[in-house]
Image 1: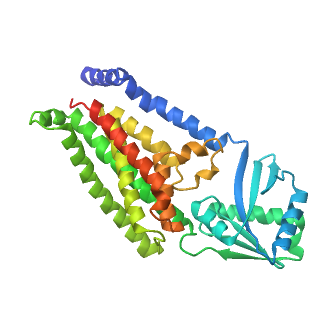
Image 2: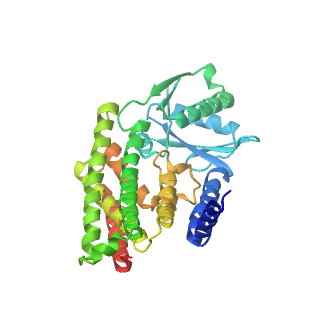
Length: 367
């Protein structure tokens, strides 16, 4: 190896080692993420799944008879709902919670992502309602079917029928699209605002701007406004594609969606300004942005319900900005929510954006 190449390699290695933050975001942060997600997904003693059981006045006695017979064969009954605790040496413990509810209550739980399977017993027939495109619902159906068959033997005298959920608002795609819309706002704001500021600072472009002179507030508000319109275009394109191809419908008040869109943009724009207010190293900035967006993208219920996480984590997850935005958008799309129904999420997201923007503006540096 020639001496010049050797010296260049050594100098670049020293540059990296002399930046502790770079080492942290490159080595320490991935380890922390692996530890946190490992606890969330692999360190659970029990797997919890919830099923809605629809009862009707004329069949409530039959309904309770079926559930009672199941409970007799499996331990773990809890007052109120029916809890089946299944133990398997290889698969671990699985808790199935059967919620007795009306048809309307069951569909609301389904639209929120709390459940993925509905069971209904009418006369001598058991009906299973779920979206065949949802793999988790398919596995849950097979598990419940096995519990009913092995525990009660009802299939000797009862028939079953699968009722695919194809009504808008109850399919997996109806759960996914609002989450993708919310995630798109977060990702576009975080990278479009944060990384732009960090990159311009690292290239000394912000130093040239301040020489004009220029107000910090004008620069940041202009950047946020431009990103707002870009986010609007991206959201509209995704929505119209989902409407055309998947027949996605807005069942609630469109003005509620507008308020949520504005509040979500404010929240993530303010956060983006804060995390990029002083950083001039793109590698550190990249780590900071990922530290904000990656955990929320995983746990906030974008691709699957956050109800699958441990119970202690759910209250924390619900208060994350991305979770609030995704839940609010889903409630308007699938549950017919109006402006009054989403006022809390809108207020918190707006306050988050204004506070983080004010702090970021206060500590912002040009170079």
